[in-house]
Length: 162
Image 1 (cartoon, one colour):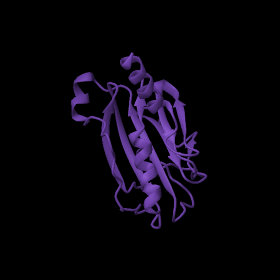
Image 2: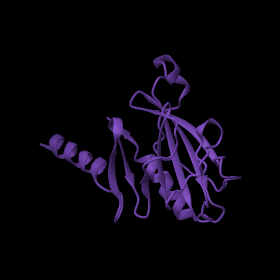
Image 3: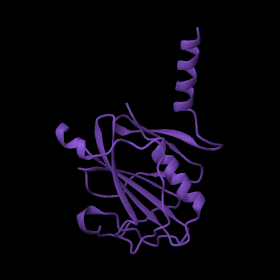
Image 4: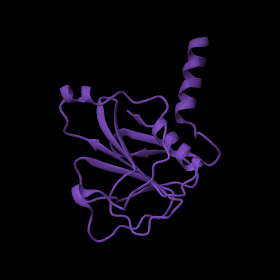
C-alpha cells in the first residue's frame, strides 16, 4: 500500500504548480513546464523552425521586423527588469550526438550577467532530457532582480519531456 501512495505523491509533485499562481503548461511535442506567476509563454519568438524555439518572458515581447543573425530573437524595447528565456530543441540530432549534451540538471543556477544587446543572450547552455537535446538562451535586463533569475531557474528545473 505504501508504493501506490508514494507513486501518487510523486505524480502530484510533478504535475502540481510550484507556487501560488504558478501553472504547469503543456507545450507541443510532449514538453511541459511550470510557468511562474508573472511569466507567460511567448507564442512566436523566431522564424527558425529547426531547432524549434520555445520562449517564456516576464514582459510582452515585441520583435523587430528583422531577426538577428542565426534567427536569434531581436526584441524591441527590452525592459531593464525583464527576463526572456528561449529554449531551442534540436529535433534532428543523431542519438550518438546527444552524448555531448549534459544531462538535465536537477537545479539550474542563473547568474547576474545581463544582455549586451538585443541579439545576444547573457548566458547559454545545453542539456538533454527524455532523449532530446536542448539549448537554453538566457536574456536578462540590467536591473533584473534575483527573484526573476530564481523563477527562470525554476522554469528550467521543471522542464519535463514525455
